[in-house]
Structures are given as structure tokens and as C-alpha cells.
Amino acid sequence: MNAKELLEEYLDSGHGCCPGCAMPIVMRTAFQALGEKTIAVITAGCFGTISGTFPTSPLKLATYNTPFASVGAAASGVRAALDMKGDTKTAVLGIAGDGGTFDIGIQALSAAAERNEDFIYLCYDNEAYMNTGIQRSSATPWGAWTTTTPPANLKSQPKKDIVEIMVAHRIPYVATASVAYLEDFTRKLKKAKETRGFKFIYAFSPCPVGWRFSSELTIRLARLAVQTKIFPLYEVENGARYILNEEPEGIPVSEYLKPQGRFSFLREGDMERIQENVDREWKRLMSRMERPRP
Ligand SMILES: Cc1ncc(C[n+]2csc(CCOP(=O)(O)OP(=O)(O)O)c2C)c(N)n1
Ligand code: SF4
Ligand SMILES: [Mg+2]
Image (cartoon, rainbow, N blue to C red; front, top):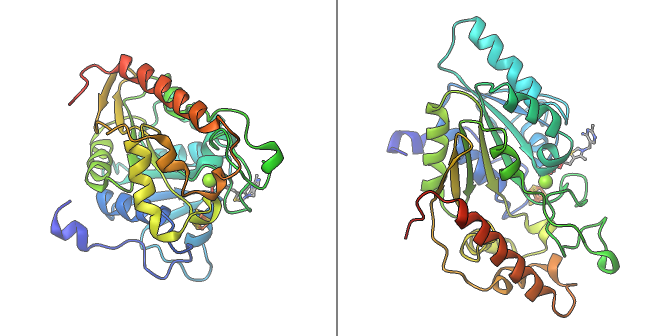
């Protein structure tokens, strides 16, 4: 990002996010990378709540709020309207949380991807329905506590692999992103803006309230997720070309899990089980890489 872009602020500091929330960093970075010629299509969730506080808003961008399940459809419509006006320069950015993406919005998302609509879909993943009180979603990891997966009945299904689901649509561009690697994040958004067709950017978004960690640890946990191989940073072009962007150190997953209260109910052997699963998934991912980078 150049100096001028960095000076532009599209999300004011007066927003209502909890201290230490990664989501405003996700949004600030996305808006700065895409610039003012952007229309954000926003749905229910923590971001929808902090950006839609009538009669004021911390956002300095054109926005369109749409019901929970419909970001894929609404963003397709905004794109079509711009195209009819001959405006190919304005970017359309659909924004939803993991609940709005992995669960309730997946039909409209899949349909828009299948039509190869020309917009960017940004999913911020805080791994639960946070805005309504930390209910589990299909993005919640195995073994996590939420208010609907209490200590006696922790999440017992693995996290849905949304990246592979989107790659299977063979769309032009899919990328994972992290608030701990902002240059990488910015580059991916700019690449998405330059790419025609459907783009899916998937951002990891630690939530101190729902994950039960101390708010100063947000960036450290985001980095640990990458360095433990829990959240690999990579991109996939045209459903085929996998590119690894960061070679993780391979730090044990326990370093990432222990600071989070949501994992404090794991039973004996569970950490080892999570580690084995992460190692297996990493091997699978590496087998797809066209050019693993050092
Ligand atoms: C059709 C519908 N069902 C339920 C809700 C209530 N609701 C609002 S926000 C939200 C949680 C959103 O979760 P997620 O998409 O993960 O975003 P987060 O709150 O975690 O940022 C729910 C269930 C709604 N607004 N609309
Ligand atoms: S509940 Fe979590 S995701 Fe929502 S604003 Fe607070 S810290 Fe952010
Ligand atoms: Mg969520």
C-alpha cells in the first residue's frame, strides 16, 4: 500500500467493536486496499451491527445492507446495476461472517460463484455466531466451547473446509488472509480487484470475547494460527494453481490453543488429536501445491 492509500480511512475509530477485535483490522485493510470506488454489501453479524448504527455510521463508503442469507445475491445485483450504467471501475465487496458464509449464506454464495459474478466476497471468520452470543457455526473448530457446545458436549464435528468448497467452483481467485500478515492481505485484495469474475477472500478474525482470550493477544494468536499450520496462508487460481504464501515454522498447536479459554475443556489426548489432524491436513494441502516455496 502506498502512503496516500494508508492515509485514507474508511472505517472511523468510533466504531463499536470490542477491544482487541480483529474484524475492524480486516475491514480497514480491505477498504484501504480497494479504495473509495467500492460499494460494500453487508449482512447481519458483528460487522453489520457496528457499521449500521442508524443514524450514524463509522463507515465512509457506499454501503448496502442485506438480509443474512443474501450477500451473494445482493452483491450480484449491485454489480449488474453498475454494469448497466457502464461503471466497470467501482468494485463490489460482499462481506459476511462465518455464519453468513459457511451456513446461512452458502446457497447465494455458491450460486454467485457458479455464475462467476464479478465481485469480491470477503468472509471474516471468528468461528462462531458472535453477534448473537457465541453460538457454534460450521466454522467452529473441533473441541471448542461455545454457548451451544457446553463443556460436557464440546464441538464434535470438524470445521467445514470452505476454501476447498470455493476452489471446487473453479472461480478465478480464492485466497486466505490474516491480520498478522497485512502486506500479504493487501496484495491479495489488490489482486482480487484486478481479476475479473468471482473472488473469494477468506480472513481469519480472532474474537477475544468468544474465544476467551486477553485482548492484547489478537495479533499473536493470528500469527500462531499461521505458524502452527492451523490457518495456512495460500491462494488458488482458477481452481487449480495452489500457491503457498508463508512457510510455517510448525510450532505445536498447543501454543495456539492454550491461551484460549474456549479450548480449556479439552480432555486428555485431545491436543494430540488436534495436532495429528492439523499435520494430516497440512500434508494434503502440500500435495496440491504447484510450487511449494521455501
Ligand atoms: C435470517 C436471520 N436469522 C438470524 C439472524 C440473527 N443473527 C444476526 S447476526 C447473527 C450471527 C452472525 O454470525 P456470523 O455471520 O458468524 O457473524 P459474527 O456475528 O460472528 O460477526 C445472527 C444469528 C438474522 N439477523 N437473520
Ligand atoms: S464479539 Fe467478537 S467479533 Fe464481535 S465485535 Fe466483539 S470481539 Fe469482535
Ligand atoms: Mg462469526
